[in-house]
Length: 118
Length: 110
Image (cartoon, rainbow over the protein chains, first blue to last red):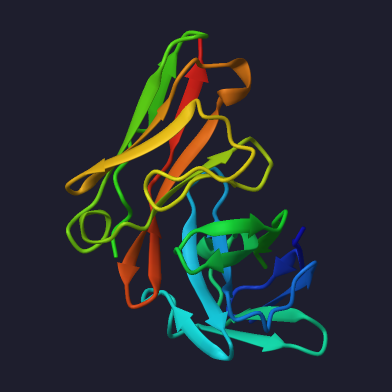
């Protein structure tokens, strides 16, 4: 059974850069049957797809493409999200996910709340 | 990419059925057989309920079913139970390896 666990700072200042890491157990991020990605959810609001990485190739949602980088560290079985130029509206719970070839998200981390505030 | 359109709320009594719609366009819901549905209880991560429009992962009760007609997908919850009270989100592939979610529907069991 695959498990995903997010880690990172809970508070980031406006204009700074957010770095989150997802540690995967029970599967390998080099498994080419899956993509590894990120979803966020502002407090009290809906889900937003951020992007994913698949055997080293990255895919980003157009609205965030200029500010995000997703990378992987196979040696640690982790993948990461970096988002720069943070604003208050980036305050959200960030989930890491496993995405299948059928374009659905079959495994989710528990989520980590990131607050953007000075 | 605009969010898919879902009704903000739906409700039903225990044992009744509720259907949630998810309306997009021919560039997402109408263009691909890759619509999925997720259930989210407060403070929890979403859970996959339906994938590829009509398929259920193992462990998901057959009370949950999905369908699609044109640019609108639907999730039906039959035989409502108290534990079905949650937020429900649809999601569609949009091309260019991108995904888009619906705005979510809060289901209340009366």
